[in-house]
Image (cartoon, rainbow, N blue to C red; front, side, top):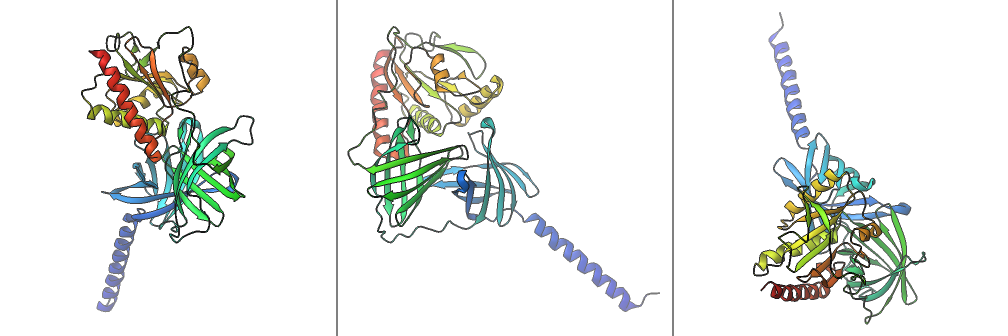
Length: 415
C-alpha cells in the first residue's frame, strides 16, 4: 500500500500536468496576430521590397487587416481561418493573401489568381519607422513633368505632384490613363521612395536627384519594371482626357450587344435605353481606378435622384471562363451597390486593341476606365478617358463638377 506522502506526491504531479495542459491550451487559443500597427514587405524585382502599412484588427474570434496609403484606408477580411493559417481577401478584387501567422509574425504569399502571379510577403508588428518631420535639405515638393518607359521606343508622359513635410513625402502621379493612387514614402538625402498597395496595385518608386532632374525606377509587383525621368515644371499639364478617344468617321452612334450578369443579351436598343441619353462606362472589376469611378457614380446617383439618365457599364475581364467572369461582375455590382446593368464585353484578357474591336466605332479604348456620354441618338457628346481619383485633389474636384454639368445637359433631353 502507498503511503500518504506518495499519494500526495502523485496528486501534486497530476495537478501540475493539468495546470500545464490548461496553460498550453490557453496559449494555443491565443495565437492570433497581435492587434495594432504592423509593417509588411512584398518582394518585387531586383531584390527590392515594397513597404506595406497595415493594422491587425480583432473581429470577434477572427481578425482583419486594414491597409493605409497616405490618406487612403482599405479593409480586407479573413475568408478562411485555420490553425496558424489564414486566407485574407478583399471586398471587391479577386486577389488575396495566403498566410501563416503567429502572434508576432505573418508570412506567405500575395496572389493574383486571374493573372497567375504571386509575391512573397512577410510582416512584423510595429509601425514603419516614421519619416523625420524636421526640415530636409532636399526639396521634392511641387509638380514634376515626367516620362516613363524611357528605356523603350514608346515612352509615355506623366505628371507627378508631391507634398513634402520634413522627410515625409506623399502625393500621386497622373498619366493619360488615370492616377497611380495615394503614394507615401520618404526623402533620404538626395533620393526618395514612394509606394502604394491597394489590394490590386503594388507600386514602388525609387528615384534620385541628378542635377535638376529625377531619375528612377518604377516597380509594379514582380512582373513590371520601367525607368523614368522627371523635372520640375509647374506649368506642365497632360493632354485633356476628353481628347484621347473619339467616334471614327463613318459612324454616327455607339452600338453594342453583350450579356448582363444574368446571362441575358442587352443592347442600346432595349426599352431602357432606346431614344434616351445614356452614360456608358468601360470598366474592369480588377481595376482600382474603375472601382473608384464606379463608387463615385453610385454615390452620385444616390445623391441626385432628379437625374434620370440611364447608365450601363461594359466590363473587360481577365477572368475565364465566361461563367466565372459573370460571377465576378455580379459580386462587383452587389458590393459597390451599382443599381444599373453591367455587361460582359470581353473575358479571358483585357487587351485594349481587342477591346476596340468590340466597339469598332471608337478610335481606341485608351484607358480603363473610360466614360462615354451619349445623347438621345446615342452619339457621344463627350468621351472621358481615364479617371483621376480623390488623390489628385483639384483635378478630381474639377471632374466631379464637369460630370454633373454634363448629366444636367443630358437630363434636358429626357423632357
